[in-house]
Image (cartoon, rainbow, N blue to C red):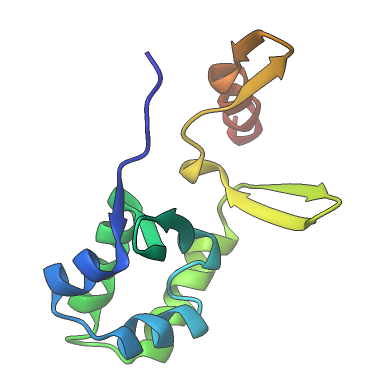
Length: 132
């Protein structure tokens, strides 16, 4: 059974945590929240922004907790040091370059015509072997 990523709308996220639009986009500019987590989707009322729920909840909660004792700049530094030590996958297409943290990859499939093959486990094993 295919696992879907649960998404949350920007408006619901702002309400849930009581943060402002300006705060959310300041965190984005500071790279506290990765650009690729801002997913634009067409809805019946126009285009809206959504986020992968688990990732964004964890990140917002981390930022709000750390803000009690650290500045945003300190949080940025600590996150960037941690993230620099993590494995990433770089994908280059005619549409640009994309960087994904391996821990954020939920599913990898290859499609050939009508055939689809889930290669998630093989993909993750490549990076687990790297750690050994």
